[in-house]
Image (cartoon, rainbow, N blue to C red; front, side, top):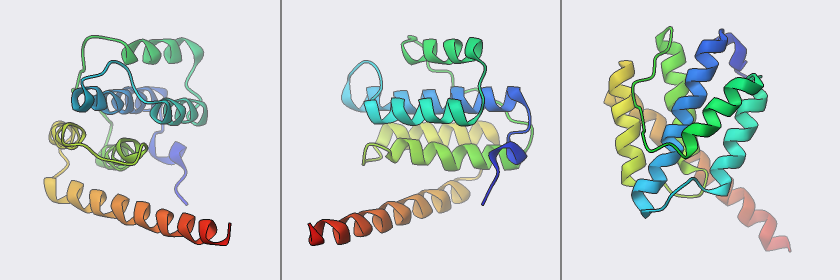
Length: 147
């Protein structure tokens, strides 16, 4: 199992990771023409901030991004491993409410381009995430059939 602190080794990388996830969560606004993010995305973001030990002052700054009028795709990481981890987790946060809209996909690919991640690698990550979602749904179905 991956230890996130072995990948996101500095507070700066963890904060950038969270900022990127917030921007990806906000892509749903573009899809739906709404303001704000879904409760599922907010729960995932809150959990990630706790897991990453984001300091309270940085949490407040990150939470302000949720209602900001800007979405900044220009995030930075120290190495490719961090960038790939971000893309992987970003695809998952986009799927958290059960779908992956075109605006989210476009944002993932734009961020990947900024981070130097190839489209081919992003596609592999998307396929992996989709397989995981299907696997999870099959497990839920097995439990529901017994209820």
